[in-house]
Amino acid sequence: MTVVVCGPAAWNHLILLDRLPEPVPHMQFASASVHTVGGTSAGKAVHLADAGVAVRLHALLGEDAEGVAVAEALRRAEVEVVRHVSAVTEQHVNLMTAEGGRVSLYVATPSPADESAVETSLADLATAEVAVVDLGAFGAELIRRGVGAPVWTDLHDYDGSSAFHEPFLRAAEVVFMNDDAVDDPWALLRSCVDRGPRMAVCTRGAEGAIALGADGTRYAVAAASVDLVDTNGAGDAFFAGFLAAHLAGADVDGCLAAGAQQAVVALESAHLHPALA
Image 1 (cartoon, rainbow, N blue to C red):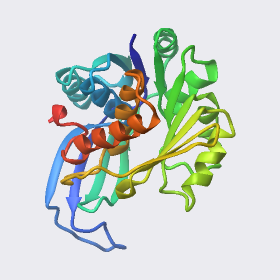
Image 2 (image 1 turned 45 degrees about the vertical axis):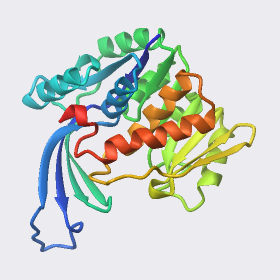
Image 3 (image 1 turned 180 degrees about the vertical axis):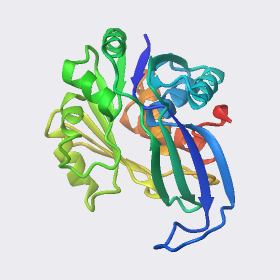
């Protein structure tokens, strides 16, 4: 069976700086500049394909040059893409530092998904072994209508109380997030599994990752050794590695280890995945 991923695919401009901008007035010289595929759903899809998982990505893409570039790059990475109509393709400018600092600027956002996009996506999701539904207005509408397959979702920098994240959390079987917005990640995971998911996973950058089962069992993995190039997409790669291992029958410890290793693929590339270069 296939994993169906629904959510953002974008065209990103990554600008590498020695430090993030200070208060204006300000001028700074970039040490590198890269145009590449972005978007959390695109990242998950390409890493799932790399791990040998049959995956199909539903994404809102314009007929603009950026949408063509995104679709072509994903095709080269052997990701099957179902393109849904948008007036423009989502675009970001990300200011990055070598240490992992980032400021993301949204310079174009896609149109709302039309009824055809929603119905087509829901029909495909219902056939999936796992439905990956990512944050965004498109994903929110899919969740509101009900997804006929086990949902895995990525809450990103969830603080434990955001109203927008709540429907995704309550619909999910497994949730992922990072610890950027909290001081106590274990408490965050506990609050998540108390609302329905059977497993909650939190990535912690150089500190590795932790997971909590609904039965209270705790798991942890150290970060894998890496020659860091760029932090974009590491969380999506971790998610994909964990999911691929789960589909192959691994236990939670094995899934965490696979996630940590898959994250290295993103961290050692200037792209979400080297196949997108």
